[in-house]
Length: 429
Image (cartoon, rainbow, N blue to C red; front, side, top):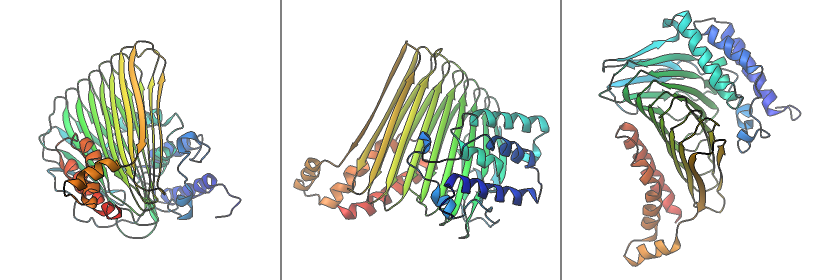
């Protein structure tokens, strides 16, 4: 890249190249692409002067030319987990849909009528209008696939819905799948999103929109294994009256990994649990930003994130809870706790409360610390060697959060990945 060209300008040029490739072969997604490109014209692409992207550089995306071309179509690998209700994407394209529970349906963009497509585009634009989610707009402008998942009113899924995103091959390129998930009144469901590894030079940039109608209940588990490539994922959720959403995240590092979790309390009595664990090592990078908007009274938010950062890796947590003037009787708590296991590792944490109502109960906090030498010594005096003690203490720090994940394949996979991380990193004890 020419040194005189800013990374965000180079990235915009790469997006335009990709967009021209899509325009050469018009398909059912053309109106979605056009709306995204129009919105993208008014948005600044990520750069370090934007507070939301202060600690994450997009230069690696530019250097790898990840955005100039789509990933090629490929055959799926065996699914990470076998599920009764399963949706599989391969390189951003829908590969498999298998649904056995009643009241659950999936439609592709081409299967939606014009009115439905317009409504979804408007909902996306509203969620992305703030200017804080530029790569979600890029996803829309370059969408490789778009589907609508619907849960009928009063549906209670007997089995979790597992959505798996696979990246195959080792050629550079990008995939941009987009999912809308709408849960009707009184619906109940467990959803698991699982991402595969990306090869070096590959970008997987995905978006999931979640709409809960009144009294709906949804748990959503997000699993992101370690990767040599780039991953960006955004969740945009809206909660209607007396609905409840639990988002549980297990994340590891990548060459660049960014999660944006954005939830809006749109109806009174809504409940949100937004918990997560992140584990980073080597030179990998993880950045999570959460934004919760309380726009109405009598809603609750509980948010707990715990991270372990070692070697030369870096983790960033930026959480913001915004209490709007009319959101009286709000209760909201947010905590971020980190274990730093190396002098060369780095943690940046910034929990924020923005409160414009006076009748609320809110608290937030953050800690960054190391394993307690006294505790390690205590274990050793009981005949437990230092490596085992190191592994047990670090595992206990995050397992408490993982144990609160819903009992789905997501929790089992998170535990498996965490155990391997603790085993590998205990060698440096």
